[in-house]
Length: 405
Image (cartoon, rainbow, N blue to C red; front, side, top):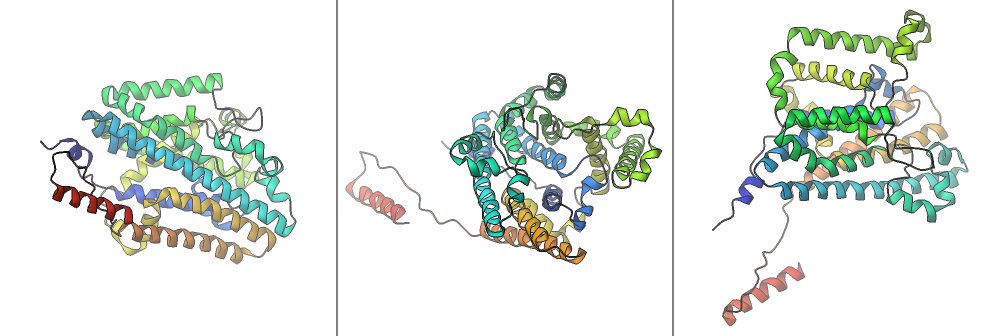
């Protein structure tokens, strides 16, 4: 009798290409934000509000977990979801270690090539180059991370915990979201975080706090947000969201134009600062929520513009987010040292920035093409003792062909 499990596991799921689109935009923003003093980085989100691409990335990851795996767990296939999500976490871990090795090697080579120790201090690799035997163990346990390599460890932890988050969501979705919020508050009150290197430091992205936006994304992906759609996208909430984005934009303007600081009351400055990214400050979280409310209204699920040629480069990058993120981090340092060693005008910054994005698009296109190439395989059949010599010969031939392939 055929097992019903494959049908439950491989049932078709409609792809929401908006997620690929926003992930692609986020990847480009992360790349640009990692290049210091780059004029093109003025196009990124962080210059116009409290949140940036990090919130969008974590939310989308949580949304996909809830959307894809919650129905699988609901059908009683928790172990299948556990296996797939832990496999994904392992892939992220391997990608992080490989990126760490390539990133530090790239910096070390640049330091020797240009005799400029600034890079190893700026990117927190000086201690590693001096004591690699000690710090390689801390890197493998995610305690030591160079600058710009803080995001993947956060995703490794969140995706690793995702099966249990989904298990709770399937049974008590609203209570799970409430528990996540309580855990966030406790982490902020008691300063919970994971120890890092050097001693006395902690993870830049506190997973005990950032889990809130991940769980909220999974809660939305599981379809719970639709129960409150009439209120979330009501005119009153949309107006509040627009007003909050305008307020955030006004505050951020004072960061770039200090003459505007006098317009902000002193009591408000004491109230909102510091806006902590490590512990996911509520100003950042609510700013992202307001942005999500307006964007989902302006960009509906069936938006035809996303199927046009101009959106293709963004979509293809978002579809391969993990390797493109790694390429972006690697390219951001290359762009940084080019601009530092060969300083020029604004046009040089634009060319270098666009060249890095072009490389990301090219790699994503190759990966997209490779994913369409069929895998060649031979089915292996275990022999039974009751089989005839002729059947055994066929099985032996099949296994030999598999080994040869």
